[in-house]
Image 1: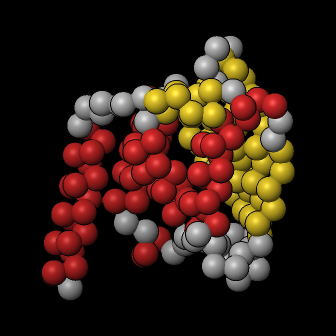
Image 2 (image 1 turned 60 degrees about the horizontal axis):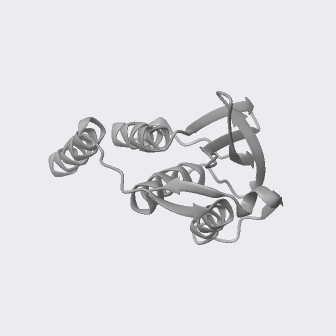
Amino acid sequence: MLERTIKNLEDFLKVSILYFQPTQLSLMRMKAGEVTDGLLAQLRSQLNGTPLTVSGGGEWQGRPVMIDPGHLSRAFEVAVRHLVMQIGPTSALGVGIAQGVRGGRPGFEVGFRLSDPNEAQPLFQTSEAGVEWAVAQKVVALHGGELTEQSNAPSEKSVVLFLPLCT
């Protein structure tokens, strides 16, 4: 028991240092569609048979976005893990991809809607998971975007990712 507690503390401290450590982005230009395809590939690889429906798209998917693939990929990984942890035996996941505007900046939104989530027991949630989520939000914010979670109803959870398009 003590060994497990020490391991959890070490993991928490590692993630906490990531949050407070300055993050240097190495931005590169990619098409918005390539970014959403990468995110969907990460999501599909962890669904284990959970039904997934994807809707949306449009000509904006050919527009460029400036991202750091390494940092953004790790933020996606945290968001995907956050969703997957809440998938229950009767859950279904819907992904909506659309053009959006935040703060007067055009961009795109990827909305994940999880119906009939399996509420994770607080006993199995670690403080590390909360700090990981904060690190993911920080990375997305450094890209000029937003990563948010909402509970629309007891039977539905959603996570929304917004990234700005290049003008």
